[in-house]
Amino acid sequence: MHVTRTRRRTTRTAAAAGLLALALLAGGCTEAISGVRGAPGAAGLRDPYFPKLGNGGYDVRHYALSLAYDPGTGRLDGTVEITARATQDLSAFNLDLAGLSVGGATVDGARAAYNRAGNELTLRPREEIRDGAEFRATVTYSGVPEPITDADGSVEGWLRTDGGAVAVGEPEGSMTWFPGNHHPSDKAAYDISLTVPAGLEALSNGVRTERRTEGDGRVTTVWHAAEPMASYLATVAVGRYETATETAVVPAAVPGALPVLTAAEPPVAADSAALRGEIPDLLARQVERFGPYPFSSAGAIVTVDGTLGYALETQTRPVFPAASFDRTTLVHELAHQWFGNSVTPETWRDLWLNEGFATYAEWLYAEEYEHVPARTRFERAFAQEANWAFPPAAPPAAENLFDPPVYQRGAMVLHKLRETVGERTFGEILRGWPAKYRHANASTDDFTAYAESVAGKDLDGLWKVWLYGEGKPDRP
Figure 1: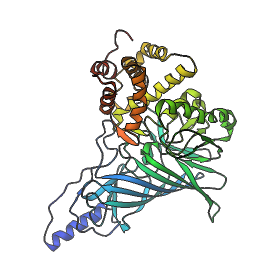
Figure 2: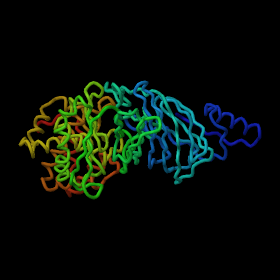
Figure 3: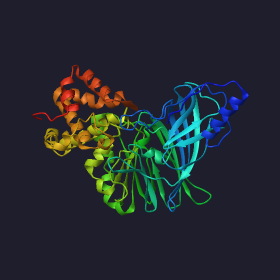
Figure 4: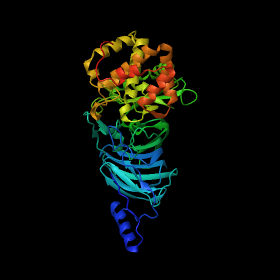
């Protein structure tokens, strides 16, 4: 959305007309705004594939979500309190929100004007927000969330199930269930409170801090995700789940043993129990390769097939349909906790840094514990023509973000790096990269510069052929 700034008028009549225009823009929902001298934050961050996703002018520090869900009707009632810091003088700012109806908004406790345009929710505070100031914006909303069908045909967002729901958000589905700055470059801590009918579990990211029964018999469960999280990694699972709690004794973001909570819907609970129980051991093995686990909790959620068509590395607690819950996929999604979740792409063009590393984690696991050399996996990938459709660092369009070159050729880049710099240096890169950019964002240029700094030499030839090259090399 483009907002045009006009000169301030000095006459009483002109001022009244300007205030009326603001009230009309806000849908008549609040009284007029005074003393505005700042500029509206940008509506969209011009991501290469999702230019309208995310918003400018502020940086979110924390989301406090209070959600009540009725599986029978599909209705979601929500309140979000966003704590953010202004990065410019703000007269207005945007949040991403798809569907749902907004009931009201405040900024720092004062009623704020708001209006909707597509997936953009614009808030106009009574007083401008100064550059560098911390502020709190609260939005109440409700409705039946509608999922998003991506350009590649996959479905994401708030997905209804028989008697519950599963929420997944890569790349933009989180805006179907809460307003926010939904670009991966703006990470924040989360507290998520979920109120559901008695007899149902309500699961999310992080550590469960409270579970209480309300006066009407519904149950509220509260989750705390202390470490920064991109919104596409937030998740909710509501339904009849069987849960199990273990611990992993690994270096992590918390002292002592790491809590590992897993959940599975009853029809798949027994069959998934053994593999869910392997998570502490798998994490211990990955810690040896990748360094300390970056979060305060771990786990997995396994759903029955039919709702979710893919596994997703939702932060601390990846989500799997039963058909995808195998050891290879589990290794992949756990590796994302370092590569993608802690070190998050600067833009969606950098997605190979997530998927290439997670795929190479599969190769490393097969090499170390199944006696299949990574070179063998590399040669198999090299022989598959689908992996050469485009360079991993330059998918041609949004529908190609999750195509084979991003995963398999991304992993090939890492294997060629390993062969070029040697085992010792490659090991330093595997551990040093997630340490240097822990809980931050990073780009492809950041990675290539980092690898060269550790290797102590120019690697332009490697990047030119394997990372950016349009064609298939003559030999692997």
